[in-house]
Length: 75
Image (tube, rainbow, N blue to C red):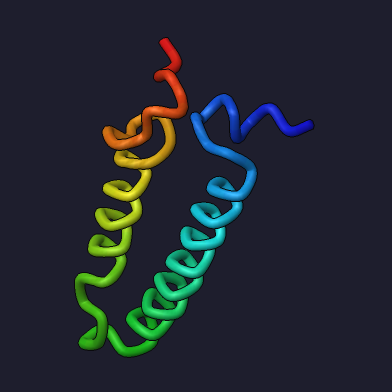
């Protein structure tokens, strides 16, 4: 039905869970960035911290997972 989850070595459910987690992280990061815009002395490193956290999560998800034997890496 949906090709994208399989293309990134995830089931529909695991893709749903992962994307939902990212959505929450983006929401929190957006809130902190807005607060920082208004009051610059609050959440000083939150944007770069959020970017790094999300980047790390993406790098170890889907086809990049080392503990998932149910899917082959896409070459």
